[in-house]
Amino acid sequence: MPPVIITIGLRAADFFKLHVIMDEETRVIILATPSDRYCHDSKPLWNYFLPELEGLSKVFGFKISYVSADSAYTSNRAYKEVRERLNAMPGIKPCKGEGSSEVEPYGCLLEDAWSAVVSSVF
Image (cartoon, rainbow, N blue to C red; front, top):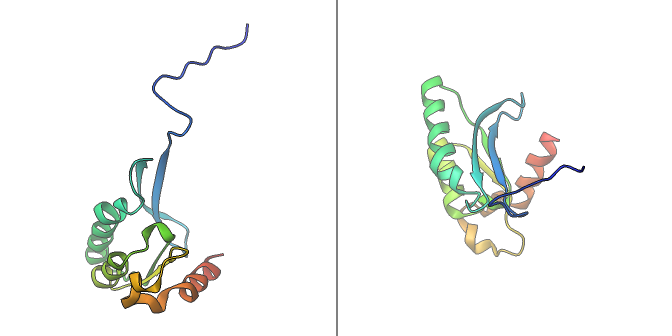
């Protein structure tokens, strides 16, 4: 007799995401937090990662040089807070099709900076 598989309350599209902060040089995961499919990718950045990184850098006295992220984190707020709270360069990939006006104050970091960050990691 074949096994019977019963799924209750889950649809095929339900999933969880794991957001991580890692040291790109050592590849060690420093912070991680899960979210469900209804949570926007930027929420862990504001609610968890920025405050924790800010605290860790002060307590342990290390310098965060840059923060790289995909286009889900693109916003003026992200660029500004990474610069101001962490004193780091935001290497956040811009969204395709978005005008540069949305990220005007930090627009100099867009495509070229993202390409440089990606090529240095891989």
